[in-house]
Amino acid sequence: MLRNKFLLLLLLPLLLLLAGWRETPLVNPDPIAIPAKTSSAEVGKIVKRALVERKWIVSEDKPGSVKATLLVRDHKARIAIDWNAKDIRISYIDSENLNYTEKKGQKLIHANYISWINNLVVDISGALTMRGS
Image (tube, rainbow, N blue to C red; front, side, top):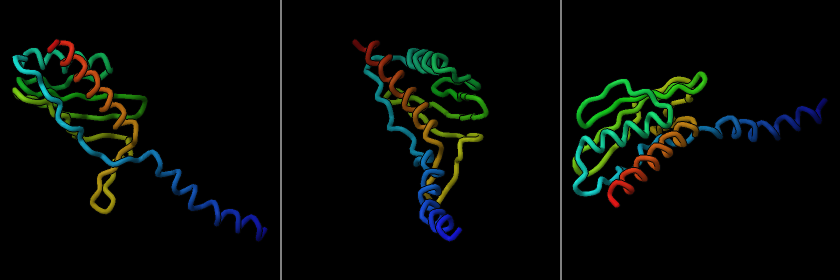
């Protein structure tokens, strides 16, 4: 019995570490540069195509701005994508069931959210590069 308690005390920090393992700092990605002579309409098409291909739902579409929602099982993420003549910016709005929290002033979220956003950045950057070639 004493051995089991001792083992539990040894494993408890590891279990706590693993429980928080899927949380990662929430940092909006760096702006995506837009090649010269790319119109705002072209950027909008590229952004919306990337969103739709990754199963995001466009909920608000204005010139130079889109808001979108991703539903994956019981997870929900909402983002804003804004652009001007120089760059595209992706910003976190809110989420459900993605463990969003603030600890010691640092925003944290489930690692999958970061992966989903990185996928969008890669898709949008690639499409802009292909368009500029």
